[in-house]
Image: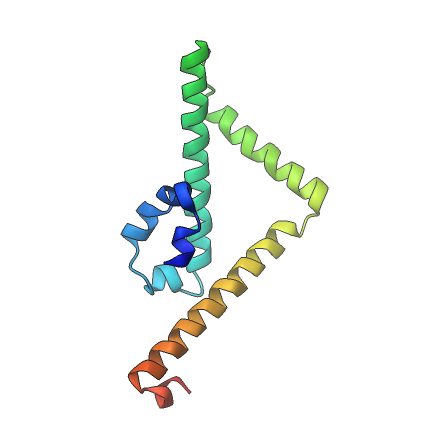
Length: 124
């Protein structure tokens, strides 16, 4: 898809998600879990990428690896920085905006499918 191609070299980050979840499934396009699942997945990928980067740097410079507590503290610091500089409601507003975009995509897909199959009366 065009959207997948826009990620260029980083599209490899979405390949496991794309392989695991069928397009238009309740998990990828579900109004309740779709956006939340993508956020959790992407945060996990970011954490894994950060860990691999830190591991590579530690091996290269012969340093020590941070433990899990230090990684958790880093995420906590990022959260505090976000709340302090962007406001307490920023993360909720960000999630709501992402959810609204995903919901409009889901409704558009549903409407297109019903129109293409001639089941418009079922949709309305």
